[in-house]
Length: 98
Image (cartoon, rainbow, N blue to C red; front, side, top):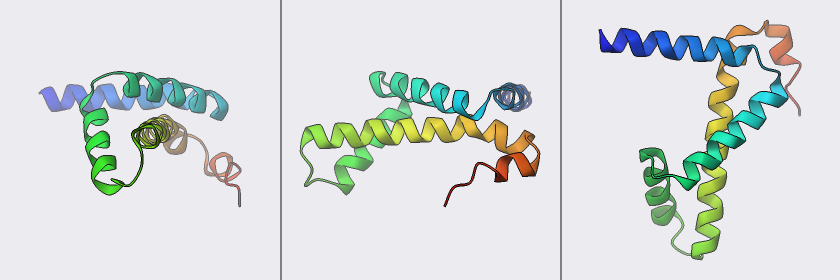
């Protein structure tokens, strides 16, 4: 039952995200990424450990910048999912840049 509610909720959130323009999904993703970076979420903790293990040669400031960037890009990607799943293929393909 709990899984069904969660699945329903995620589906609704993705449908709502699909109503946003691409620029607004990016803005929202950056905002969520900053919140995750400032907070103590499990995603923040896992990202921090991974960066520390993978890049021990970086200074603390460089690691923090990488953690922030990673969380921001991950959040932007999640916000884009709604658009990618709900928008017409042509609209999604038009956003691809080489």
